[in-house]
Image (cartoon, rainbow, N blue to C red; front, side, top):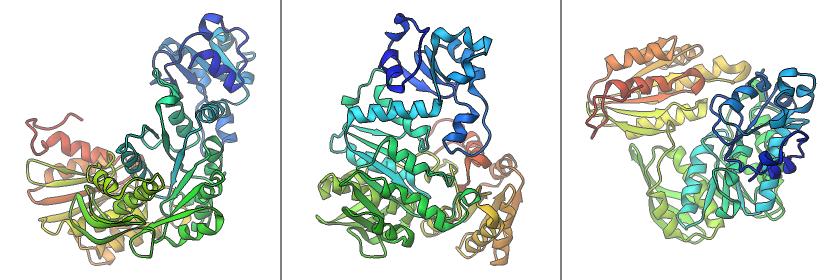
Length: 495
């Protein structure tokens, strides 16, 4: 895509931009001046744009970094016209500025128009947990048929990440004709109709609802509000779209009433169109089961841990059936899937211990799911150690939710619990109430990291579960720096 086309699609004012710049090919799109690459267009976001787009928090004015972005090789910047007018520093750069009323709205409009011109199927995936894993599994299954899949980058699932993912179709020399289907995460964290907005950018042909859990309660207030916000995906389906619903989640299955078209269900406990039976989770890093679909049933394996990941796989299989993939092909593709980084990765170390890295995010449901996973799959371990970070954005009941999680951990059959930062002290207290005495609380992830490298022994199984905001990933980094992985010749990885 050239600068001229992008400018027209956004409705930008570019009075002082030269014909030479208009004819330049754009290599990509960036919202971060620190990582902008040569040939990219930089979007200068500001507090006013964030507020109008429904984002929580206070943000820096990226107009202050336009000069830096251009110096690093950005060929142009999208800026708010009212912010530029009268600013001598920005006015001097106006020959490289595309001026708009709202920079976030311009980014979203550009992505929407790229989507409209492309016009192929979109799979939207939402849920309180599991979105990234389900997205990766869905893309993996569709790729197995030869479909060329555009998928969300990492966990890019909000009003910035989704349009940036769509714009990968026209970045680095790509063209929309190179893609047959898009698999996009759609997330939300506030009561501002975020998913509704995302559905306007890329209206889904298929909408997947994974599960509803108490996350973002700080902003949403109640589980009912969370369910209503997630249901915007079903409500935003294109006419004739397909809703894929978790039959085992009472909040999700109620969304059937919000959709007049075709519904496909998945589950393990309740009757469902796509189901798993004869489930074996006794081997950490592997789930064996019989996959049942409207086309029949077949034995299947998933090289991931836990029933929660199996549910994500069933959601992906349900999408695959909508694309009329053969049952044998679905089962074969599931057997070669891999977990995304920091989302249940099982790491085997040469010293004879194992670490389950689930340090990307955490909430009460996902924490307990992972604890149960190591309890079921780690029966041969010398010790089952849980390192649980403080859980964020849980609202006014956050202390009780942490303590309740601790009580469940204390009854789950683990041997050691470490809590990390803030309200993780309540997790420890709850576990003590349930009878678990081998517990410790650390103020920071760095303190826990220094302690665990001295504590690890052959036969240990360690779950590291937390959020990036608590930096529990540093614990895994410290372990990998100190100890080589099994089959590695290195003494350890660099941090």
